[in-house]
Each structure stands twice: as C-alpha cells, then as structure tokens.
Amino acid sequence: MLVLFESPSGYAIFKMLDESKVEAAEDLNEIFSTPENAANAVKLKHFKKFEDTTEALAATTAAVEGKLSKSLKKVLKKIVAKDAHERLAVADAKLGQAIKEKMNLTCVYSPATQELMRGIRAHVDSLISGLPERDMTAMALGLAHSLSRYKLKFSPDKVDTMIVQAISLLDDLDKELNNYIMRCREWYGWHFPEVGKVVTDHLAFAKVIKKMGVRTNAESCDLSDVLPEEIEKEVVALAQISMGTEISEEDIMNITYLADQIIEITEYRGQLYDYLKNRMAAIAPNLTLLVGELVGARLIAHAGSLLNLAKHPASTVQILGAEKALFRALKTRKDTPKYGLIYHASLVGQSNPKNKGKISRMLAAKCSLAIRYDALAEESSTEMGIEHRAKLEARLRSMDEGGKGGKTTHRPDKWTNKSELKMYDSAQDFTIPAKKRKIEEIDESLVQEELDTSGLIVSDGNLQTKKKSKKDKKEKEGEEPTPSKPKKKKIKLEESIEVEQSTPKLKKKKKKVKDEDSNGVDTADDTLEVKFVRF
Image (cartoon, rainbow, N blue to C red; front, side):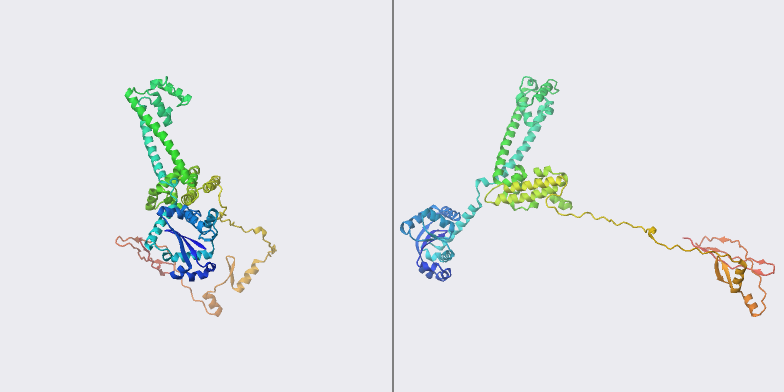
C-alpha cells in the first residue's frame, strides 16, 4: 500500500512495508514511537519538491478545495505506470475521490490512515533525506502567510478603497458645483435677472445661458429642447421687458465658459454616481438595500473600510458621524444624539419625528448584521437585506398607525385609585318605635313639700342637695344664733394709672377708700396691683 503525504516542501509517496499493521490504529503508535521504528515501517518511494511558494500555494489551495493539482497529477502518473494495482492512502476523502475519478486509483481513507499520517509527520525529517530542517521551516512559514492571504480573498471586486475615494470625490463635486451655480446665477443676473426666478433647475439654467447668450437673442433662439413650452414663452416675454444692464461680448463669453463647466461637472457627477452605485452593489449589497448607496458609502468612508465598519457595534453605527455632538453632550451632561449619518436613510426620513429615534436604532442593528455578512461571508447574496428591509417597513407602518408592532407584549395600564367613598344609608336601619309616655299632672304644692322634707332643691331643672347654713345647724342643735355682722358694701373704685417712662411696666396705685355704712363700720377694699408688660 502506498501513502500520499503532503508537506509544505512537496509531495512525498511512501510504501507501507507491512499492510496488516495499518488496520489496527493502536499498533501504529508503537510503530512510530522512534525514528528507527518508523524507518522499518515505511519507506520513501518518491518525493516531488515545490519549486517556489507560488507552486506550493497552488497545490495547497487545490488540496483544500478537494481538487487535483497539476504537480500532483504528474507524480501520480508515474505511480500508475509502475504500480497501478497498489492502493493509495490519502488524508482527505474529497481528494481521494478526485484521484479515483481522474487517475483510476483505489484510495483508502480511514481513522487508521489519519494515525499513519500523524506518525509520518512526526518523523518526516528522518524519513525524507536531503532536506534540511531550516528549509522546511522557512517553506512552511511562507506557505502559511500565502495561504492566509488567499483565504481572505482580496479580489479586485471586493476592494472598498474605490468606494471611499468615490464618495469623497462626489461630496467635493457637490460643493464645487454649488459654488459655480451660485456664481453663475449672480453674474448673469446683472444682465437678465428675471430668468433666474423662472428657470429654477440649475442644469437647465446653464444650458439656457449657453444657448441664448444675451437676452436679445431670446426670440430667435429655440429653447424647446431645454425648457417646457410655457416656461420658454415666459422667458421670451421677460427678455423684452427686462431691467438688467447691458454687457459686452467678452462678458457673455466668460459667463458661457462658466456654464459649460457646470454642465460638464453635472454630467461627470452622474457618471460617478452610477459607478459608485455599481461598486456598492458588488461590495455591500445588503447594506445598500437597507440604507442606500450614498449613506452606505459614507458609513464605509467614515470607518475607513468595510472590515473596520464590521467591527463596530450597532450603537456605534447608529451615531457614526455625530461624534462632535456626542462628546459635547457627554461634556455638558445632556442627552446624547440618536442618529448620525444614518439619519439620511430613506427609512428614517419616512418615519414621524417622534419615531425617528426608534427607527434609527432598529435600522442600525440590522445594518450591523448586514455589514458583517457583506464583509465576512464567502458567498454574497441579498436575501438578508431584503428580509430585514421588509421587517423594518412593517414595523414602521405599525408605528405610524399607532400600534405597537413587532412583539405583542402586554403593557399594564396606568394605575388609578378607583375606590369610592360609600355613605352610610340610614334608610336601611330597622328601628322599633318607642311608646310615648303620658305626662301626669301633679300638684305643685305637694311636690314642694316633698322636696323640703328631703332637703333637695330644683336648680336649672335638676335636683340638687340643699346646703345647710350654720344658723340652721345651731337651731337644730338648740343653740341661739349669734348676731350676724353687717355686710361690707362694695363700692366701685376709680382707678388711676400712672405710666412710668423709665420702665416698661405700668403699675396701678393702691388706693384706700373709706366709707361709712349705716352701722359706722369702716370698710376698705382689697389692694389690687396690675402690671402691664410691653412686648
């Protein structure tokens, strides 16, 4: 049995001395334990060295894709001529199938074959003679770098540098064209100011200047291929009553040159836009479907490349182009911007002002996925872009109609206190009617006698105990009552108040009043002192 071994330095074909040992994968580890045992198990039959890195890269890429390279085909032809009956052990099933179809060789692929390849790879330096280890290391490193560049597939169709340059030039052309048109309108307006208000299209205005020249040629000049019939008649009528100044032939010649520049730049801008549209459809088709050619190209140019843009998260894509506003908002602690370059996308422009932030956030999330698919996918298709575009349009319609759209999540209503104050209903009470008592008429003299005997008196409709005086007590005890002292007669006193200036307190002077009553007893009222405090 023959073994096809692929190395960075070339193709090697070994012959297995004992085929019975290949069937048991466990025994192969013992066979290739040492270089001496490996030399006794396999023997090098043929070795084809690669001439340069290009040939090695072509052979490796063909093996990766499961194809038969030209160099391998030449090697196998020699084997077919000599040992056509031998079986060939290969490391890749696809490659074995291709060899079987084209070279009519029986190929073997099994787990034992993988162990055999591993054992040969471990002792390849000793099995292949005449190949220094330094050369094999250098060839392996060069092949690894070449293979990495090949896998990235930097084809001319996927170069995004052209998009960056094209969109930058397109922006510059717009600025210069705007300046040229403004200068041309102002310059020609000194001669024919009325035509600027009638002809609003810039390209048509430049063509009118180039074809008509001075305003006196308006009647003889045919402007039907530039202007509509109604506007052409209006221009002719205004040329007869124009209030503009007269200009020389040299002046109108320079104005015509400026008009020619405007026409040429406008036509070149259209060609550049078509070129940019085609490049965007080839490099980033899904991004183009979501945001358009101009916005997608500006996003790529702002990030530097499509690969750099693919590394940005969706939140960065959303505010890309509004860095100055973002840092100003962070510095002043205000609200951060909701959109940047993505604001000019058609989906954001179609939405209501209150929904622009939501739509820009959702669009940035879908754009982030589309950019990564365009930058890193091996096969380019527009299925993802079409699907995301349809979802965003459906969500936009639902938001404009006032619905929630998307996922139907239950949102609780605002809590309101629905408790009601219940009044007491006295009509539901059940009461037992009370019986009226008859008021009996009683003799007042009998009642008074009963009260006197019991020692009670009636005061304010209430019964109270009658207080006994000392006289009544003595009479009751049998003693004679002492004569009572005459009562002191209270006399109203005239109060004189003396206000002291030095102190805030006012004192009422004491005053004694003597009065003689009928019994000749002097009476004096109690002294009264009143203090007034000033606050």
